[in-house]
Image 1 (cartoon, rainbow, N blue to C red):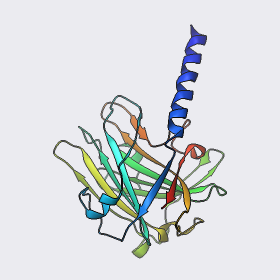
Image 2 (cartoon, rainbow, N blue to C red; image 1 turned 60 degrees about the vertical axis):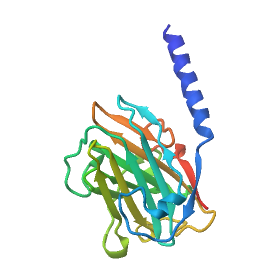
Image 3 (cartoon, rainbow, N blue to C red; image 1 turned 90 degrees about the horizontal axis):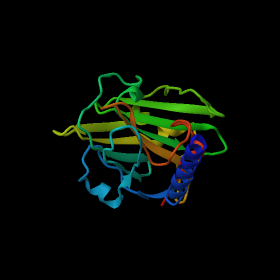
Length: 227
């Protein structure tokens, strides 16, 4: 029975991997720069399709989806997170936001360098932007230096009456300049992944691409192409 259990688990993993293979690439559309608001009705967002984040583990199977656009100055992201309880107490930027409800994006512009950008935003509108060197699974983030002016992100979060929340944020290329392939041009391709963590009844996770070890499993990231 134990052997059968292992075979069944392997079969499930293979099937999930195959199902993910057809959706491991997205094209993101250009836009003019616009004011950041956690509002899905903003005209610019009408040009972008929703991307669903599959529920990967944990008890809560809330709807989670995002949109993404790019301009000449940076990248725009919009998350919608269905929820019933907001589990968030941290009220400081650069804190361990991943220990509470949070959305995350990972951008890896150059696969030849084990260096990528991670951004986290909580329902309380606090952020964690870090640059991550990853050498064969050994990773540790570095906080931005001289994080001010045109290098700063812009972000807003609105929590609804039902505790569902919408998060919008802008990541400027000037913050990502230590990375290669910056700024991107038409047809540029970056590896990437998108996540959500929720703690209503234990740890529940969503991700665009299925990772195997942890969120930093960069070899399993998908790809976004600048249309």
